Image (cartoon, rainbow, N blue to C red):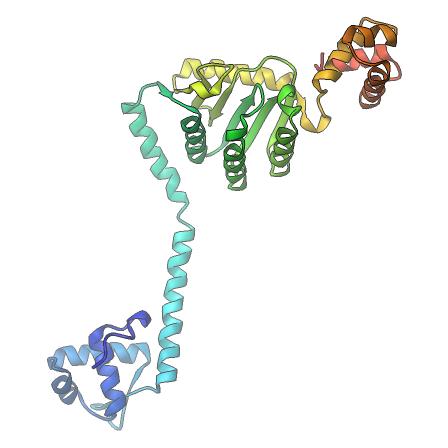
Length: 322
């Protein structure tokens, strides 16, 4: 007798041996089946009953004898039934994401009782991994500031993580300093975030490097000028309220990336335009050629939809570019 080759279709070894016997010897009864297969009559009867329910054994000439259904028909029926059950299991697995909320709540409850309200994370790799983990458990929103260029070594990991969580539906608001947006890679990254549904704004003002998750947890750089030194995980309500207030203030003073915040050179030109009338004097003060200076001025007038330098300076102040 071969092994249990029909196990993949849901038959036990005993059921397979009975089915094969009825293929070889159709029209036999329970007593013969039990004797040939070395089973009790009760076990043989139970196997025949299940095989009949599966549609692979039928009654023969009378109620006491049985035969196996044609193998092609039997395999098709077993396979259809097995596939139907597997599809049901797949649907259950696919719909199991709601369990994350329950499990995450248990985890948060454990953290509230066992984890300090301030934790230190050492090193850039650990900081990036921590942001990814906290983003995974965030259910509603993530708020992020980038006060300067993202380190090249971490950019791809940050990009992959952000796009992953955006695709699963996490809302994101991100503020980037214009010095970061001067980098072509960062500007492209900001465009990708926007395309995936994030709200991205630029600002010329000072920023603190932080990430806030669901307004419950924050990650703050221990050294605002060097994220590689590590970060603090903050859960203390008072500190969180202060960080949220800071973020919302920066957000209200920033402009959408789609509005193309001015580059560093353009900001310098705007400052000079606000107080110098002559292009020659402005170019000389900034140490750039007259042609380059006038090119910046023309571009800024066009972007600000201003008829003259004075109106451009007012519009730039309204947009908090200067």
